Image (cartoon, rainbow, N blue to C red; front, top):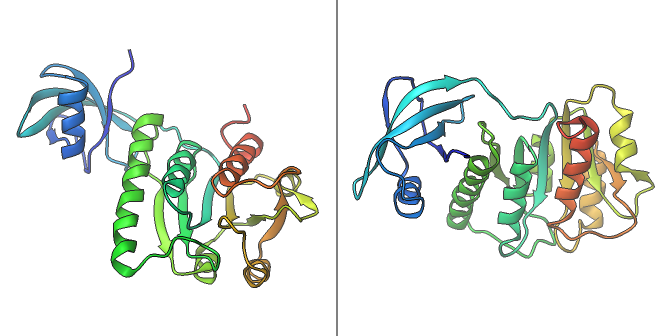
Length: 247
């Protein structure tokens, strides 16, 4: 039987009590119908996970006792920063969720010239909080104990300035170099920056800016992938060649 996993802002410590976040407490008590004495796994994003046991559930929330710690990690040896142009609707949620499941270390969203989604200062803060919650939920589901960073840059130039990796690639169906070939060029690849444009693609000015910033333009197959498909396909390829899917 798979145990319920909950993220609890820590730091957590063996032998102490912890209160589950409100949403997790509701899910545990009303959806899963767990009660005092039931086991669950909690993690605080600082490494490893904790075996815990509920001591109370109810309208006032849910509380658990931390019983033991495991240093188990499920992180990929390939640290990927995903530079993702803002996508509209629920597509951005989908990208953050699935990228987290695929082991990305950081999601760096940015406003592209052709991005349909435009965010004011208040909306930026709300969306960031929401996307971070999506990443936490994905970690709870997939077993990760470390939550990827989710940040937002004002534009592509700002995003490129924050992308530090020995190999930087962007997807462009017109490119002559394939993504697998680019990945194989770097021996013992441990860090990768992956740039994905919006629904309409990067503008020519943005493409040239990225190339000047050290990005290699690469193709991924012979078809044009949607904005929400491209990052996930590229992440799967990268993890298969240099990450935790290759074995």
